[in-house]
Amino acid sequence: MTKSKLLPSIVLGSICLVVAALLALVNTLTADKIQQNNDEKAEVALREVLPDHSGFVTVEIPEEFPSSIDLVKKSAEGGYVFRAVVTGKSSGLTVMIGIDKDGKIVGTKCTANQETPSYAEPVFEKTESGYYVGMTEDSFTEYLKTGSTLTSRAYAGAVKDALTGFAALSGAEVDLRTEEEKLADSLNAALGTEGSKFEKWFATDITGADAIYTELGGEGVVVSIKENLIGIRNGVAVENSTVSQALIENALSAYSVYKNSVLTPVALPNGTPSEVTAAYVSTGGIYVFELSARGYGMDGDPDYASGEPIKIKVAIANMSPTDVPSAPHGIIVSVLTVSESENEAGAKCSDSTFYSQFVHKDKDEIYSVPDIDGAPVTSSGYKRALRHAFSVFEILTGGNA
Image 1 (spheres, rainbow, N blue to C red):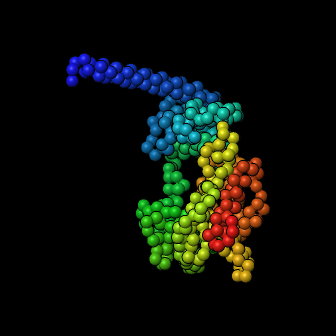
Image 2: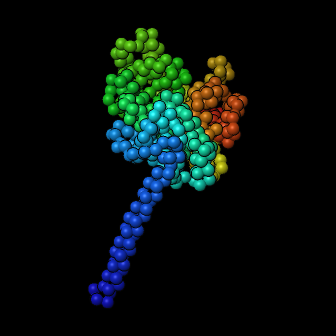
Image 3: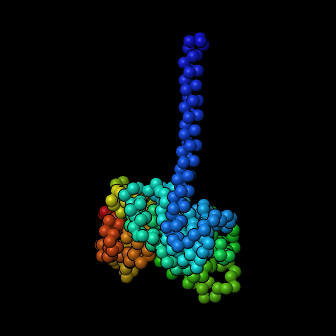
């Protein structure tokens, strides 16, 4: 290559190196400035969330603390201020929480966030002292505020983590496991396993049990009856001295129904509505559908909507409500809201008090179920998805959709 051809490449490479070095320098200066701003906001906020306190000193964070807590300050009066960084609709949601020496929340304040502006600061500063004021670890109850459900839950999680941190500093034994981890540990204990993962079998209503959990990649099943967990492997109950024989027999009966309801995938017919994403049929003739409903998360106010559908599972049996063979038609035998990212009112679609109302309903009775108060978009989308499941069910069973 001649010198004249090589020179432009050298110049371009040099320019790239200089630009990269400048960007790195700017990034370093910006990061330092951001950290300085966050620290300054923390100093101001700690006196807002814990007024009438003074002499704040930094406390070393113990290992058993929730991972979201990155700063702890203690006042001369024995109160604490915690800074928690969590993820709402975006990462970096920072909340300061003030707790007095008795473990009572005095104030909360959002000091940084990347949330959608229309429901960020105006929501966080809705009240003078913040949210959850007066609650303790024992009385804490998550409630959803106006705006994004994801943001609200993250905010609540930050406050709950602060309460957990206070308990740890007070000498209490702290269990940092999530509810999902606690359940997984209990299921493993019932089945005599370690590290197994489980999936809740949704069509519990037809078994008589409270819940049935299947071991992923294994043959084990755990049946929940009256807050008792009974492990079953290969049709035999795992030895458990704390469970009565009557409960074990009930668990085995539920297990028998479950085993006779093994699901086989079914191809969806042409023209299937987009809300119906998968179909299965059990050995007992029950059809199961996975649904993706368009609720408030997708069809609500764009500034507040999460963009996520409501995930539903529904089981439809080809029989009449009174089991009259001469008049067969589909009825719902089980429904479960698998996940949702609705607004405050719509989030109630995940409560069994709502979706259990569809059990024993046929296609013409779906809309007889009352809407969720204040959530017409969620309610309409939920029912529409169930109705589309019936349309596919009728095609698969030889009827007309």
